[in-house]
Image (tube, rainbow, N blue to C red; front, side, top):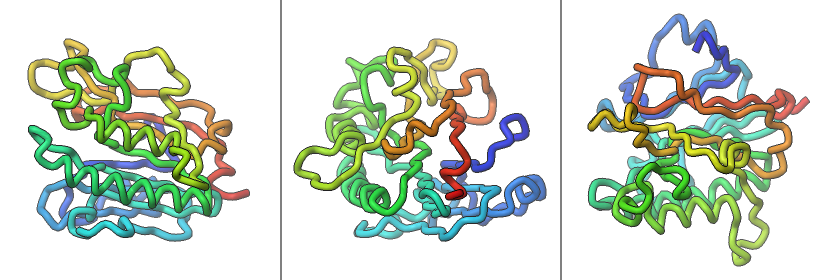
Length: 248
């Protein structure tokens, strides 16, 4: 955190039961929004910001189970854009919760499209999907068998980026890191089991997805592959023109 000195920091799977009282965090980020699950030490998302938000929302409109959403999404409205942080539902072992994942995707797609019609959107966090075969080490053996790499999940993500003709008026979105690194195989998640990181067996699950009309304002987007020890996920960073947030 000190090395990057971000203006906005997004955290996923925080697993906190209460908003942390941390003088270091509070000194760096005067505006903090924590979404905390009702289930103890489970999920959790947060957006920490140096910029004052216009509004903060922690719900997913239309989703039939608010308790399932709690701890998985924070939306911060700034003057110039929305920042959406998600820890997206996992489809589960043996795809046992794929139905719940599909429900999330249905309502989240409608939600992000609605936001995009009002202001540009910066969506970031753990998407729990590997969008293409380039984003997972063992694509063939995992296809339609493993959570995060099924037809339902990849199609839902694809339809956010490039809406079908039937979605009249829906704006396009861009997976920024992939756009800037079209042929690279870098990952953001490595299981602690089986020494996956040393073997390079990973998934790219953590991303910045932006409204297409603001992508030209991005200056840099990288996966911090040299970071060890903090998590089984790697940090992803993006630099963008600050006027997009401030509206100036």
